[in-house]
Amino acid sequence: MTDPARLPAADALTFRWSSLARLGERPAEEGTGGELRRELADFQVEELPLYLPAGEGEHLMIHLRKEGHTTGHLLRELARQLRVKDRDIGSAGQKDRHAVTTQWVSVPAAAEKRLPHFALPGVEVLEAGRHTGKLGLGHLRGNRFRVEVRGAPGTAEQAAARLRELEAQGIPNYFGPQRFGLGGINAAEGVRVLRGESNLSDPRLRRFLVSALQSSVFNAYLSRRLERGLFAALLPGDRAKKHSSGGEFWVDSPAESERAARGEVSALGNLFGKKSQPLREEGGLLEQEALAALDLTPADFSTPLAGLRGDTRLTRIYFLEAPQLSPTPDGYTVQFALPRGSFATAVLRELMGGEVDTLPLPGEKEA
Image (cartoon, rainbow, N blue to C red; front, side, top):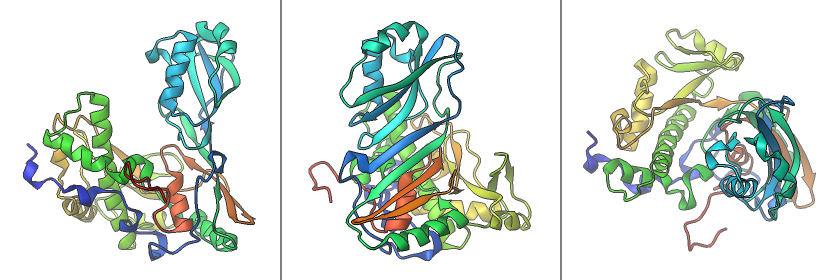
């Protein structure tokens, strides 16, 4: 059973980019600097679907563009106006409120006749088509981002050089600040759930907060790999994944590091839950160190209070297509595509340095 006295203090779990190592041992502040999201259109996200409408079936896939709305609010409005049940609406994932985003959703085909009457300020229906199944969570290939960095004149060449490094060496697959909420405190709230101190009754919200704690442990583990020069290497006892096929395997030979150096395979990190398998041997020692720094153990995530099965996540990812960068009078525009579940801010942090896109606590002034 979890011992509340030895779970971590909130400060140790507050998200800060400065506490996480960078590719190539760069200092935390080194980069172009600049400002994000001065306008909504400065941050654009295009969902890359895993499949397109088949043209027939009992479901209707709808392609939407939105700005200023959470995906949750959009789905609730669709349910209300199209007169369908919330549980019958499908989406591949959440999209940022503070951006211009496109994504696919699905509804029962019977709602098709009401779609022309759907109206919500800031939302546009781009196209729709019949499909054989409901769109499921994670049913996307990735996301394409187009980001305007302002307040950084004359830095485009520096940013382009760093982008080439990321393209060649891979991107540290950190969870970004959006994962940790206002003030970066979601992981600390997850500790309160594990301690049995939370008054929250919604099981989905409780799982969400504990999953932020999972993410904090993963970030701490990945940071240690970067600090030790193990980003493009593998240790005995690591678990790894092939980038070409997605196959996973336990590492039992030092020779596997040669494949990692070529970018063919990368280490996985645990998102701890009741079904997780801790890493072994040398890989396990590094994982234990990351957990101990936060005063946690795998057992803390296997209790009924945690409510999570567990998963793994790649420590290194690659762009899905060649990134592009162009100078502007006030900075630069960068476009890149990432696999599903990866954060644009993990790339932007490597370009800009500093505390990129972190959200202040309520009442604090946003920089």
